[in-house]
Image (cartoon, rainbow, N blue to C red; front, side, top):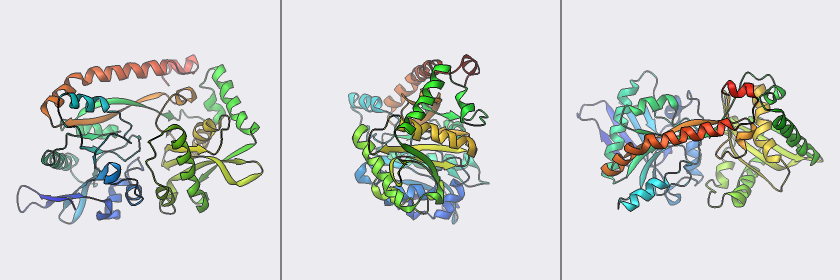
Length: 401
């Protein structure tokens, strides 16, 4: 435990604690608050795996610094937080703020960060126990964060990919909203994949059909595997494909260890959905794979890879097969992950999300508040430009899909 702070009065029933690892916090009590949420990425098992696998630790620039609130001996509030010595693995690119701080002679790192590491998926928020006064507990947590950051000379506190409803709550405590965008597929009451294809103009509809046929012509078969259908031997392959993709396209972005993927079995396997590609004559050895997480009506594409270059296999395993599966399984929202050059042409409109920020240096805080509206207006215009260029039928464009 890093630090323990008590209420203003010695007889206060509330206790604030800081934790160097989530293992210090009882899983059952944490998940009582996390499991009801739409996001799977605030659940104890996922966060614990990140730490015990060596993916998240001070040496990698992610020092766990989790905040909890206790009423007598009951956990009633929690927030996964990290002290960051850099901005890698966040997918909200704040380098311009770091550069500005440097020019002003202000130390930008370390900083406090609230998000699930390496996970650009909307849903971050404080965990509050059912029946508690959310505004009261949030105020206690914000005050504790401010005290901790100022005492330890952290430049600011940043919450990334926040839950839209929680954004309204945290805005009341002086945090500034910075708009970004993701590429999100949403179900429009599609009955099947052909129904989904009807939203596209004729050229793109034909293109998608050709891309799917290209995978078959290459002699490959793809299949969806969920939960217990995923054999234990496949877990090391997830890392193998992830590792290969990082080496090819994202040098310096290999954040997760092999142990992380292996530890997903068996305690987190119920959340997994894999799209596995193999040759027609060998259904035991995968040649490509996408790795997704499912919770309720939400699906999240996280990683993918292949052992060789196969025409359009990326599109099939990361977009078409998950969408096809999602329609039949009642998925309403599919977030395929970071990036967008391929996604926008395959039914993923640009969709706004927000991060929330507070700088403790008065000059940085003043500049942020002065320019953020202009920055956000630029993002709104970017979203409009992207969505005006989507390959949809005129009818779907007019409907604002």
